[in-house]
Length: 157
Image 1 (cartoon, one colour):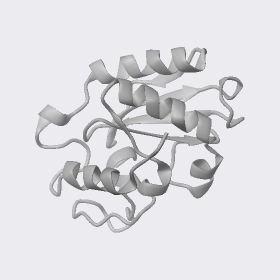
Image 2: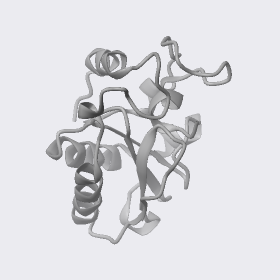
Image 3: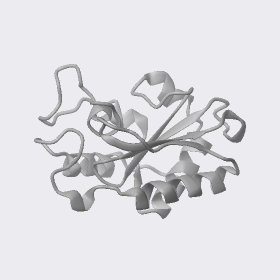
Image 4: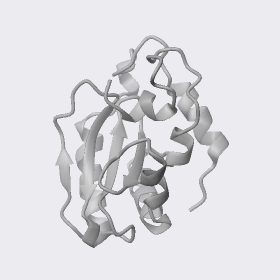
């Protein structure tokens, strides 16, 4: 699967809300449980496993977390998938944590990434690779320590 970094950067900038940090002001682009539950089911089908899911996320810029067990992925470690509150964006990291760290991005096997991206696309979501989310955030709504796009769309506030 080919990822168009410039196109995805444009989506990140378009969805950015300079006055909101956990949810966009315009609720029409906000994912609902209608996005999250089908994402869980699609990932379970594509990876032929049962996933754990954190549906009770609060004080965050993401809707929820889906955990793919290490036994079902080529990354050889748990893969964490997140759905953003700021539009139809997903991302993933390997190693037991969804985070902005280089290791979580580098440990994600390309095959796992492609399968997650395909499931995301089936729901109308854009999979956003970790290397893009590690780029410097140039919007205006985060704290000084929050320096990457990851913080804007997939982190706790």
